[in-house]
Length: 305
Image 1 (cartoon, rainbow, N blue to C red):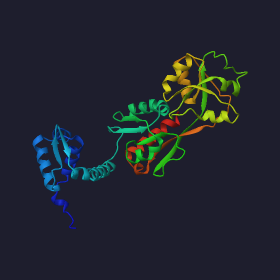
Image 2: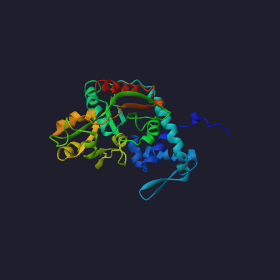
Image 3: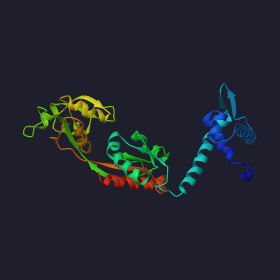
Image 4: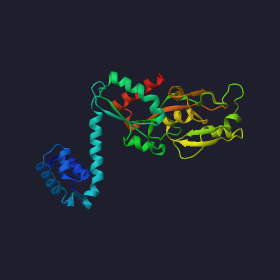
């Protein structure tokens, strides 16, 4: 098969194709590319000649892709994305002037602990930087990082995907919180049995009723009653301060939560293992200047937590 001479082809037509395919409208595609309607229509005519196909046909108010357009769309999008990544990686990243937006995979907990200090540092040193916090399914974390849907992920990663890199940020452990003057939370007679007999709240991102604490209690043949499970951290102070429920939470949340209501922090009467909060990123982004800056700042923030 004879090789196509790319010098005779305007590769900007591929950008035009991508815009029309995604917008399903010549007018919207023109606005997206800052082109006039006549210029966009002319580009579409050239695309039709290039691929020898109508590519897009107006059906109702939308330009619907033909079978040929649908067939080639993925390859064109991939090729353009690769070109964009090459151009982005070749540019010098200056946080003081950049208006880059970073996507951080983060839970409520890591967001609560990390983001206030991160935003304060950026306010002083990188005022144009923006962030998007994105919840994620750990089973998809490798895919999300590789496809650059997120730049880094914060959390507990016991078995990170092979295509990722990881650095430890800080250690964490559980403490308990209850309302002030809870009748059963005392320094003298607060045993594991007493603790297990209390009504509990379990914070969990999973849809089950088994936390790490339940595994520890089970070793002593103890089982607690979990009155409420929730994926929402911020409701805990209101619930705990107005009831006899107790909960175990990461220690870095305990002090700010205690300041929000009539709460008491107590040491758990059972031994739980600490865990490590880490940062994960794709090997594909390891040498990216913007990604490296973000990782450096996050690591600095966590060293002071």
